Structure formats: structure tokens, C-alpha cells
Figure 1: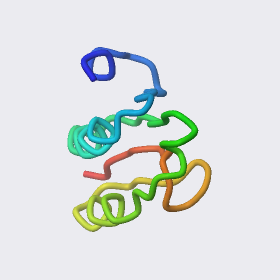
Figure 2 (figure 1 turned 90 degrees about the horizontal axis):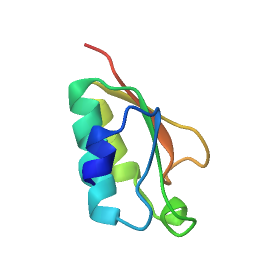
Figure 3 (figure 1 turned 90 degrees about the vertical axis):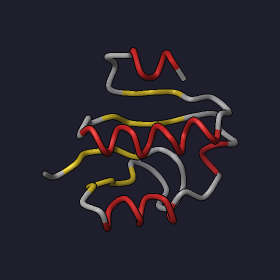
Figure 4 (figure 1 turned 180 degrees about the horizontal axis):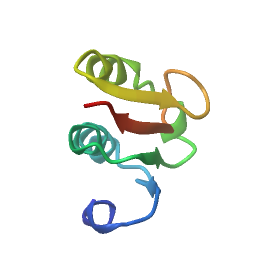
Length: 79
């Protein structure tokens, strides 16, 4: 997860780390950084819509890059 914080790349690959994925989603949304968060093939099939919907209701603008409700989305915050 430290590499994700320090990375200046637009795409962050979290591998199999489900907890890190959820934390980083909220973190990047809260600081307004545009990032694409991705992970392993297994992670791309895990539902994430509850978190994304909650963050969007708080002002985030998270859009899915691939399948809706699963991992791999673009984070951007409208302030």
C-alpha cells in the first residue's frame, strides 16, 4: 500500500489487497487525485458499488472504466 501512496502513476495496481483497495479508493477520492485503481483478475470480480455509491453521494465523481459495480474505476473529486 505504501507504493500506492508514493506512486505518481495514473494507474494503481493493488494486486489481491481488498482492504487496501477500499482504503485507497476513499483516500484518493478525498484528496481529489485522479487515479485508476486496478488489481488482480480476482479483485476485478469483487463488488465495490456500495463504497463507490457512498463516496459519490459525498461529492466524489467515481466512474467505472470496465464492468459497472466491480473493481477498476477512475477517481475524480468535484469540489
